[in-house]
Length: 59
Image (cartoon, rainbow, N blue to C red):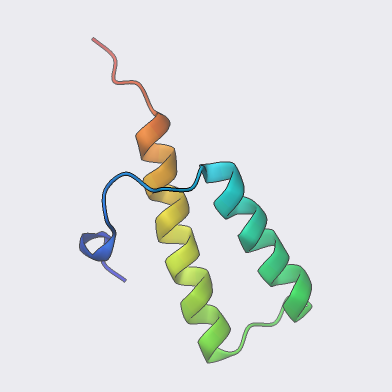
């Protein structure tokens, strides 16, 4: 999935999204269906956007 589909400035924190990713893996027992894989991919993109929002650029 392209990052172009992500709205800048994630509403949720990286920690919140990370917890949802962990819950997904626990719920599925570590094996994702195609639908769950798509959900996982969206969550990872959201997590990455949240992380980028917390990074301070060096001068």
